[in-house]
Image (cartoon, rainbow, N blue to C red; front, side, top):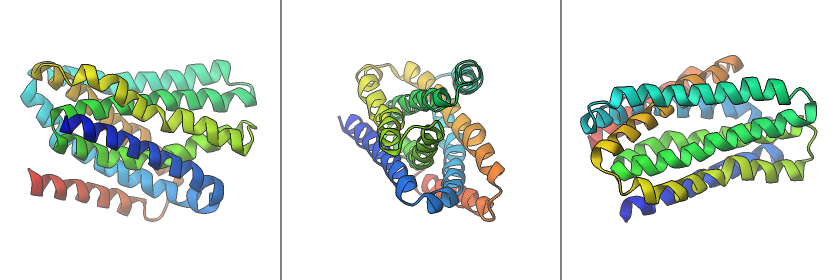
Length: 242
């Protein structure tokens, strides 16, 4: 019960952080565009470190076949995002007004998967879930900003862009948690270990392949510092609670 409570709380927090990102870029567009890279780098540092130092070793303890599921988790998100951003957007998003909504749907799917990851990690332990959530929640802020900007770039007005961004990127996360936790919470340890490894692959993808390349394109002066701080924060938490 404790684990399920915190999984739901964290997913709602993620929803709130995404909403804050959407509101921030609407009211403080210049600051939002300048700061989004640092949030990405910090979140990336946390996610990569937490995955390799805690989540992956934990999954290996729980299931001998965890490495297979680790690879599967990474490839699943990679192929899914490539399909949504490449094939779908190229084929259906050639019209300016369609590109933003299609991309928002892709982000919505991604956020729904985030909710499932909260269910899996908190089912293992509150500590494992909290570690994963530390990076995941922070990466929701730039995700809200990006979703809003994509919709605005497609010619959708501000009010509708805020609504669509909230539905796609924010509310989908707690929805993923609420729908998946009743099933995941009752699984045996070995099955849970395979799902944890799958989630770890997804976390590595988000940190190393999804966030970092976007941050590197911006070339911000202190992006490496933000990444390093994220790594150090994760190491400190794992060290003192390990």
